[in-house]
Picture 1 (cartoon, rainbow, N blue to C red):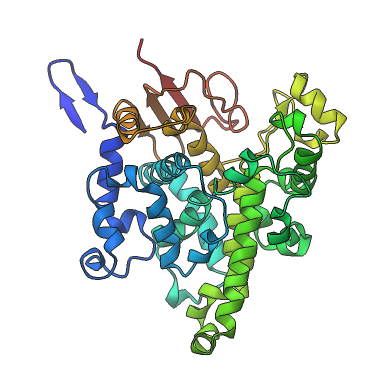
Picture 2 (spheres, rainbow, N blue to C red):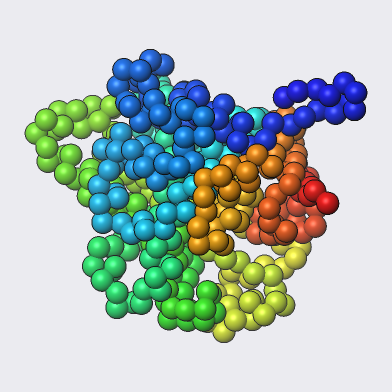
Length: 393
């Protein structure tokens, strides 16, 4: 950040510079970092990823490499990922979320409380991970996978599609949902199965065609495929001894039904749309039985920072992330992405009780944050979260 003495203004760094700064420090963004010298010793993907702007042209490759480090590479073996522009938005959202966590004490405090409550169930105190490690583990699972079901939605798969041969919806079982229920809005969790069914049967109400919602299919797929990976590891003789130790929880049932279920439900709920009572969309929801997803203007928002911090963060960055707006074009050259991030800045102010996010020069004309915050001024009910959006004239 630089200071212009003549005009007495602070020049806020643009997003491309802030992203490059984060990427130059793997400990900020790479959960599987063994030590600070790993980039030179172990993982070649870390070497090129740290280079200036490198992630822009190889975002998809980098995401796959990230999951591969955690023995989760098979997640991408059968998953439809033929939308080359989407990984740029996904990785940009990932980095933006890290920035918000790093720079906002309020966001960090709420996320740290959530991740610690999960960790306390699984590991003895002497093996506790750092708050940043706890955040990065869930955040990479959630954010880097949140749009991996996008191809299924765009292809307008019907309820008779072969997709259902690969995906089991056992995650909607109440017993599986219980461990992470406190971090997912009950109204969204209760309506996820019905929302999924109606998005296929009544597609014209949603996106103009019968299709499966990308958040729902992505979250369910994440849970089911990681469960399969864990089961394979359990049957691997070389892993059996490790699986009985606390460290073995990295692929045991406790972590599956806490960390992984939490990540899956966060992805499932991030694209379940709610509507304001009295709107055309709300009336359509009433017709198909999605009444619980309708809110009054004065209602408390379903997604709250204090109660659902990671879902709140995902929905926020998924909305304000600027590269997403460029995807309206069929081609999105690296220079266009770079230019977009060069002309957008996101500054964060406030302590552990209030945060102000100031967005400048965002490419989208209107950002709808009504599902998270109050209309117009984008403030939450407690008055401790404000978003300001400024545009160049």
